[in-house]
Image (cartoon, rainbow, N blue to C red; front, side, top):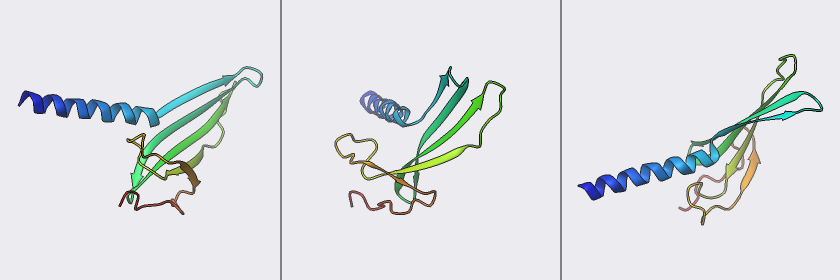
Length: 104
């Protein structure tokens, strides 16, 4: 029972660690332009396809925010297995051209 609990806890922690690799928010300040660029990225799965959704916007020194741009990249592999990851490819919001039968 204790072994099983430890195994489950270890699996949950390792899955969370991998998710944090892909899910993050970064803000970068450019002093020459006095602008902050913010990027938020999330790993998502839809119709059996793993993909990244990346939202980017900028804010100037007066607090004016640019329209948010959204970029998508789908995975040609497995996000939680570093030995099976192949590459990311750019796509649209409909995930056109993304493989959905990886490993089957």
